[in-house]
Length: 120
Image (cartoon, rainbow, N blue to C red; front, top):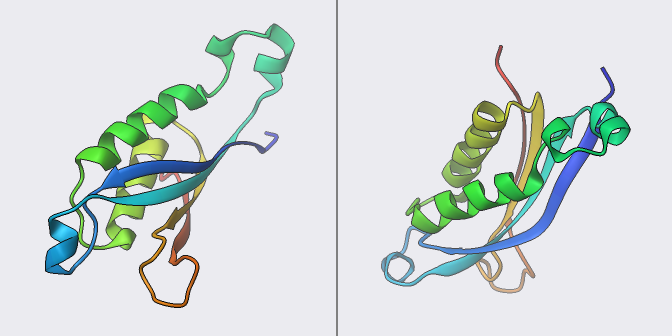
């Protein structure tokens, strides 16, 4: 099976994230880069959205989840988002980068980058 990638870059979402008291009171913006393995050959042949991974549907689901979440750690947020993508959208593999700008003085951004295969 070919491994094509459908991606979303710099998906910005406001959420409660962090361990400090002030972080529990105000929403911060996190940026997500998502790469999802798929086979686009059927969709390319049919030119039909039903034959591909609907990245708009993925984005809407991830946005809704992250906006309502209140995790302390970006690690937890990353795991939960990858679980949603793998299990609800049936992709065989996902790479997710969660960027929390401003978390460390002097660094432009910090975060986590994880890759997960779907457990079959």
